[in-house]
Length: 341
Ligand SMILES: NC(=O)c1ccc[n+]([C@@H]2O[C@H](COP(=O)([O-])OP(=O)(O)OC[C@H]3O[C@@H](n4cnc5c(N)ncnc54)[C@H](O)[C@@H]3O)[C@@H](O)[C@H]2O)c1
Image (cartoon, rainbow, N blue to C red; front, side):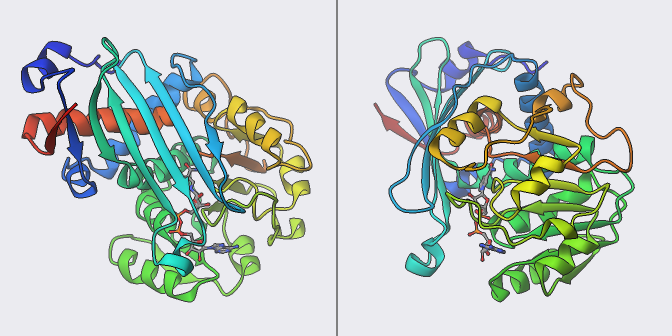
C-alpha cells in the first residue's frame, strides 16, 4: 500500500494555508520520475480504482468548439493521500491553427486534511506519461505476452510516449508499425524513438497495413464527437488486442460490439460521455473496468483467440498518484516557486 502523505513533514517545508508551490513543466519533469516509476504509480492508481478505494466523480466538461473538450478531473486516493483536480483540454486543431499542442492542462494538488491547495503544477507531462502507462497496464493483462508486433495509430505526443513505453510490458516485440495522417509526425516518431527501442519501427502506408500486421493496436489520434471509422471491421483478426485512448473514433461500431471482451476505464465516465452523444450507437456490453482487471477482480486475456478491446479515456486517479510523487520530490529538492495565497 502507498504511504499516506506525511502532513507534518509537508508543513515543515511549506506554510500550508499561506502559500503554495507552482511547478512549471520543466520542474515537473525535473522530479526525475522514470517511465518505470510512472508505470508503477499508474498501476497502483488503477488497482485502487478497481477495488473502489478511491473517490472520483465522472469528469464533467465543456465543449467550446466541435470535437474539443475541457475536463474537470477531481480524485482522492485515501491510501496515498493524493487529492486534487486536473483541468485538461484536448483541441485537435491546435497544431494547424496555432502551432500548439492539442492536449494541455493544469493540476491543483490539495491537502486532504485541510482542503487547502499545496501545489499548482503543469499537467502536460503528467498526462503525456500516465496515459501510455494505462495502455501498458491494459496490455500486460489483455495482450498476448508473446506479441511480436505492435501498431501505433497517431504519432503525436501520445504516439511517441506509447512507443517509448510499450516494450516495458510487451518484451518480445520485433516490429512496431506506426501510422499518422500527418507524415512529419511519423518521421519525428521514427527519428526520436528508433534509437531508444529494440523493435524495428516501420511506417505503415495505411490503416489497413498497420491493423492487419499488428497483434496489438493502440490508438491516440483525435476524439471526435461522432465516430469517424477508418478501420474496416473485416481487417480485425481473432486474438487481436485493441487499446484506445481516443475512444472509438477510428473503429466501426460492429468491431467493438463483436469483441469477445470489451473493457473501459470508468463505466460512470463513459456513460456520461454516452449522454453527451459520443457513442451514438450505444456502448457495447461491458465486461469490466481496466482497474478491476489490474486488481485481479476480472479476468483479462484467457486464451490466444480472444478479440479484446479496451477503451481508456483517462482518469484523475492516475494524474493524482503521479502528481503526489512530483509534489513530494519537489518539496524534497526545494524546486518550484512559492506563491502566496
Ligand atoms: N485517454 C487519455 O487519457 C488521453 C490523454 C491524453 C490525450 N488523449 C487523446 O489522445 C489523442 C492524441 O493526443 P496527443 O496529445 O498525442 O495529440 P497530438 O496532436 O500530439 O497527436 C495526435 C496525432 O494523431 C494524428 N491524427 C489525427 N487524426 C488522425 C487519424 N484519423 N488517423 C491517423 N492519425 C491521426 C495527428 O496528425 C497527430 O499527429 C487525442 O485524441 C487526445 O484526446 C487521451
